[in-house]
Amino acid sequence: MYLTGLRCVSCQRVYGVGDAEYLCGACGAPAGEDPGVLDVQYDYAAAAPAVRTALAGSRRDLFRWLPLLPLDEAPPVPFTGGTPLAEAPRLAAALGLARLWLKDEPRNPTRCLKDRATAVAVGRALAAGRSEMYCASAGNAAISLAGFAAHAGLACHVYVPADASATRLAWLRHYGARVHVSAGDYDAAFEEAEAAGAANGWYSRNCAFNPFLVEGKKTVAFEIAEQLRWQVPDLVAAPVGDGCTLAAAGKGFRELQRVGLTEGRPRLIGAQAEGMQPLVRRFRGEPPREETGDTRAASIKVRRPRNALRLLGELAASDGLLVAVPDDATERAQRSLGADAGVVAEFTSAAGLAALAAIPAAERAGRTAVLVVTGGRPDEL
Ligand SMILES: *Cc1c(COP(=O)(O)O)cnc(C)c1O
Ligand SMILES: [Zn+2]
Image (cartoon, rainbow, N blue to C red; front, side, top):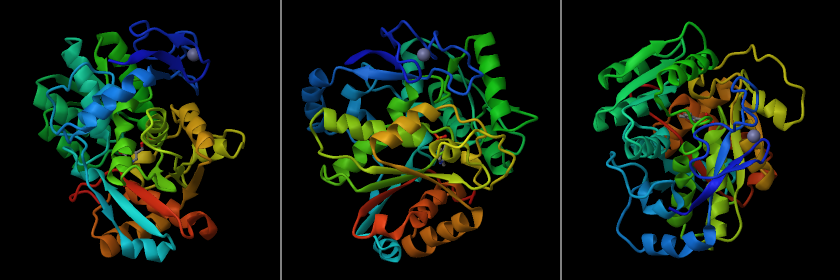
């Protein structure tokens, strides 16, 4: 492994590998707005030649990128990552983009980008001899963990909000997870999960808590760059809940530069729902307020985002944008993904396309863009 340590994104304190498991002990308070999420650091000079050797190999899943992951070897998990990047010329023309590609994350084992984080988390749990895992989730992270835990024979406890859809609960039951349905929302489920996880000593699959999960998610950026022959797109869009996914993509693109594979970085374009947009308000420098609205974008319906600082840092580093889109725009975007590009995306994922459509036309004109289609189960649109 090329890990050198863990750095707190809040107070910048640095921990040695093995000196911190989850959050920063100095920032500590898990209930706080910026809980002290840690960022995994690497020796990029040493990792660079190993990355090139790995790329010459035949591996096609996310462990193709093992030198930039926090694992000694690829774990025995279902094939994850290595998803297609499909060009969508009709959508590009409609948006005034030079070119647009869709990163097809529903091709992952449980139909969602979350599997990238789960693959690394399960790998870390297996390497540490842990046998029980947990997470809080609007549904996708829980389904992902449940599927991978079933495959590995690990016990799995998932905490979901009261409004988790019947389809999502059915997938969880199908995988044999122990399902705890909160009386409250995702934020309530998150707190219940952390309390139970700490009390029982289960291994965490919460992305804004366990620092190693973002490492799995960042591989989506590695793949996009390789699929575009190391020409990074001008824009990369994705929906934003806790902030881990888009921030991870930003980290991935920065790391590609650090190991000398790419020049330049894309602008990150994040989408929140108009009815639940705490990060958009913070991005704009507005004072925080209680989020009382609602949205159908269940996978980004997060009142108190836990990876805000990481995301804001990546947005600043990429000259990115974060926009709020109304559900009716997301609905149009979802229909357009199907009818104009032949792609099934869950409602939340279509918000990324709605965000691309919502930025000023001048920011799109003549540009190349990638939309990360973060999830899409055909039975759950
Ligand atoms: C979790 C999720 C997101 C948002 O990811 P965050 O890390 O919470 O910002 C976006 N789309 C889908 C489909 C998701 O499941
Ligand atoms: Zn800290």
